[in-house]
Image (cartoon, rainbow, N blue to C red):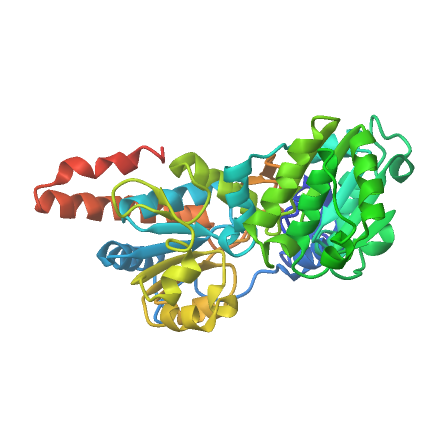
Length: 454
């Protein structure tokens, strides 16, 4: 270790949706690496340790190094020439970069989608149909005496969720920590999170909706038949006891995991949980919230919602935003071979999408933004290497409870940030679109997209 050491206090970990902002980072400035991450969980420590500066070009076209200016020009030409371009990803970059991406997609009249469409998209649909009684994680820490995780395994996916916000921390109205709380887990099998629970409900696979609906009936005082155990795997006696505990608590929280959205029922499951929370507010204070994965996926949903009115799967081809999951979401536009160009930002769909979607992605010009070489950047026509948000780049991200947090970068990167490239790309796209429109004698209708980005 060199003598050129820097300490960054109150740094933010952008690995997962917890966005813990109490890190104390020890940085070796000569080696340009983080040697210690105090307060980080096992996932956070790996996130900080693995981000070192790697050699390589900042921009490539068809695998050959070019200048940033040449790559930006080529990317702009590709996107403005397409008839059905798509923008996807956005969940691992800053809100400032996300905002530029929305404006670009607006100008080229394409579709914009975030990774929400392949994770908690069903919860987003449920929110629109049912509504959401919500909160901040600070409220949970200080007030919640009943906590239920449904379809999630935070011990492995969000290790500090238990220790920083929900189970063990001592709060204003929970001074004894876990002793002041009842913790319930609902899942199809036991997981490493199960030992934390005071009550564990093992629901039959694909029966989450039936279980939640039975609980709603009990909350409302309706009779539920004992055959509910054969249907869901949970006895009526257990459900009646659980519902009474929920009605009698002071502040209850329902956390929804992807076990609800990636199984039979999908948005109906999430909607049932949100409706259950609403029902319980007739008796006490109850809230519900999805547990989000990527570091700024919540920010992506917020930014796209500010600009378009919808959180993901938004299309601008008519000159105004339209929302239709299943039609404008990225897996679907690629699998149907609709898209003819793609702008992929901070995501790697070529590594995890269905094969039909990957095959089509490989057949169209792709503009890729990532901090490292990925399956998507390898097939990209234009590939940008960018710096890592939160480690090399400042900006704003949103925690899973919709609280915005400012990033404090640890050390500089030789690579530009996503925003640094997207901003001139947006300006060049705007110039091309307006120029083409004027050439056709229809320049009056294109300047509307200039307003989202100052």
